[in-house]
Length: 165
Image (cartoon, rainbow, N blue to C red; front, side, top):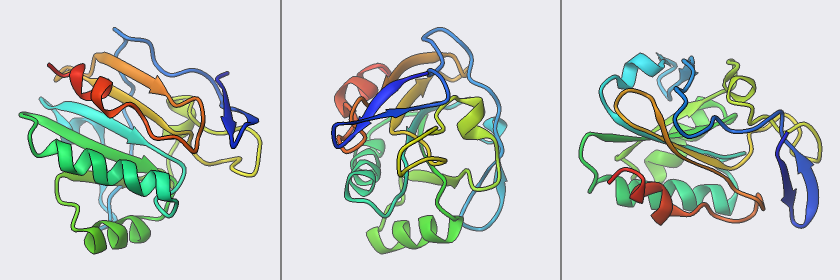
């Protein structure tokens, strides 16, 4: 169980992020057109999973914008935003913001949060995903992880992208 905070108050997640060197688990996430995406959908690509509670919060929106901006410079890499938001909300946000260099997927009807041990177990955010980043190589091997200690803080973008070099 990861111990993180929300505005200084303790919050607990289901478990811990996958360790560096491990292979990430498959998933079934839904895009804004209600198509199911799996790990195979991104076969042969390096992946940056930008995971957050809800796109409708300033920090989550900022992380989606930051990774979108920096993703265009990365070769053979896909940024995958994941939250429990409905696919319609994620699609609306990306359209309004002009985000075109990321995939934004919903965990609203899958077990991604539990499988990746990111589901928040308590606090007002119970049931949502914690703020985390997982970076993998083309073979789905974990190169970097960050469980953001304070949910209101942004992830370390530089460290995540450095792991791809």
